[in-house]
View 1 (tube, rainbow, N blue to C red):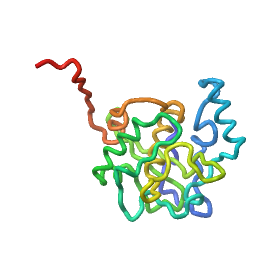
View 2: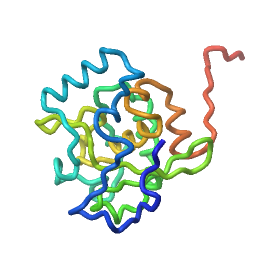
View 3: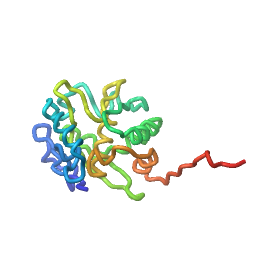
Length: 201
C-alpha cells in the first residue's frame, strides 16, 4: 500500500500544482489486469471509451465540498455501481455521530492542494494514507463509484470509499464485504457480530 506523501502538509502542492497520487490512479486503481476477469477489463475499458475519465471532483463539482456547511449526516451516502454497500453502511452508521466522521479526515486546511489525508486503523493501529481528488466520472458528470450526497453535494463518502479501496489495493477488491470491516477500520475498536439464529432461551 502506498501511503502517499511522507509529509501531507507539503507546501509544494497548491491549487495551481495539485497533488496527484501516483500510487493509486487511473485504471489500475479500479482493477489489476493480472488479478481480474476479462469481463472486468471489458467493462471498465468500455466505460473509458464512452467518455469516463478521472477528473478532480473539486473542478467537476465546484459547488461541492468534503462536507457542506460544516455538517455530516447519515443520509449523505450514495452507493455507486459496485458492491460497497457494507462499507457505505458503516459510514452511514458513524454519520450519526458527526465527530466520528470528521476525525477520519486530517488537515482539511490543505484541501486546495488536492491532498486528502485519511486516518484508518489497521489491526487496531492508526495509519494515515492520502488520496487525491480524482474520481472516476462520466463526461456528463456522473460518478461511477460512491456519489455526492443527495442532500447537499458533500463528498466525504466518495473520498472515504476511495481511501478504503486504496488500502485494499483497488476498487474491485472491495466489491463485497461485511459492515464490521468498515467499523473496525474507521474507529479502531474491536467489532463483534452476534447471530441470533442460534440463540437459545
